[in-house]
Every structure is written in structure tokens, then in C-alpha cells.
Image 1 (cartoon, rainbow, N blue to C red):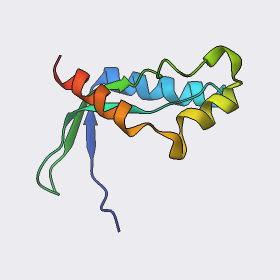
Image 2: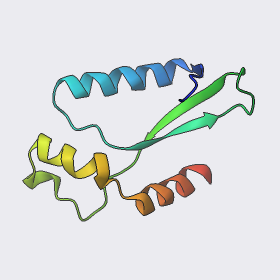
Image 3: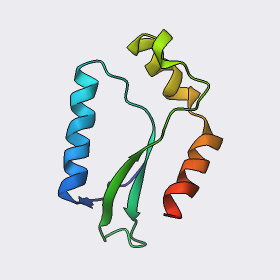
Image 4: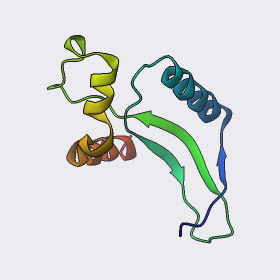
Length: 95
């Protein structure tokens, strides 16, 4: 069982979340990304998010030749490229 935690976010993150939901309802693919912020070490404390960083698609994915559904299947679920996500995390955390 996973305990629920409270996430405090900036208004910018709230707008990003709204945009993600809006794009999902219009069948635009929603891909992986990173939450930039700070996780509290205490279960009772609150976690903070200051930015959502969308992971860019690898250069080997041709978005022009795929339908939105095909693209969603390619970038989501079991197809997430863990090495690419780790590289993105390194890039975001060093800026």
C-alpha cells in the first residue's frame, strides 16, 4: 500500500498540469517528464514541486509519420526509455 502525500506546487506548475490535462482531452500525446522540486524526508511533511520538465522525444522517433495514438503508445507505458529519462534528469539537475 502506498501512502498518500501532499504536494505543494507553484501556480506555474498548476498551469502546466492544466495544460497536460487539456492536451490529453484533445488526444494530444502526453509523454514522460520530470517533477523538479523537493521531497520531504518525513511522511507527515509536504513535498514541493516548482517545475514540470517534459522529456524531449528521442531523435529516432519520427512524429510526422505517427498518429497521436501511435505516438502515445510509442512514448508511454512499457516503452519509456529509462536511459533517456536518466540523461534528461542529469541535464535538468545541473542547470
